Amino acid sequence: MDFMEYFSRCKMRFNNWTPPRFQHGKLNEYNWLVQYPENLVLGYMTDIGAFSYINAKYGVVIEDFVQIGSHTSIYSHSTIDNKKGPVKFEKNCRIGSHSIIMPFVSIGKNSIIGAFSFVNKNIPENVLAYGIPVKIIRNLTLEELKQLESDCE
Image 1 (cartoon, rainbow, N blue to C red):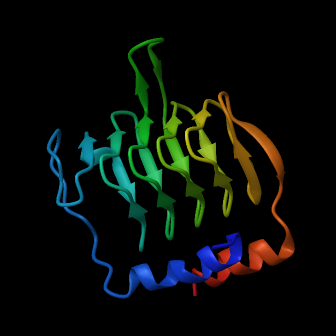
Image 2 (tube, one colour):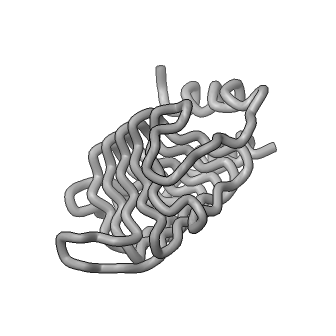
Image 3 (cartoon, rainbow, N blue to C red):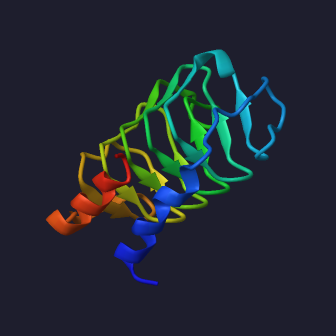
């Protein structure tokens, strides 16, 4: 399956979307765990994969139509280096499985983060980025952007 075919299938996931339920420190029905859910803003038709972890102590905003792959960890508080700050996922961005998102990071509208990436800096809108640490690889093409944005209709 190529890139464009994959994104044309994304709309089908959301036919009967309902917001997930979660409690502090407990797995929800999709097997993801949220700490400090009172500081999590979850947009319409978001898709977060199984076994993902969200530490929202200092704020996490996930805007409409964001897709986050399984086993992703999102930290608004890092106990390793004691960084504390909000995390924001702008409308329709995509995060590959097993990625790590650190405090004070914002990922721009329509941007795609490849699997297994370590995201420790802001990512602008409409780009493809991946790596450890994350690097911007290229701007998305007009065709790719058109396909991504059609998923939001």
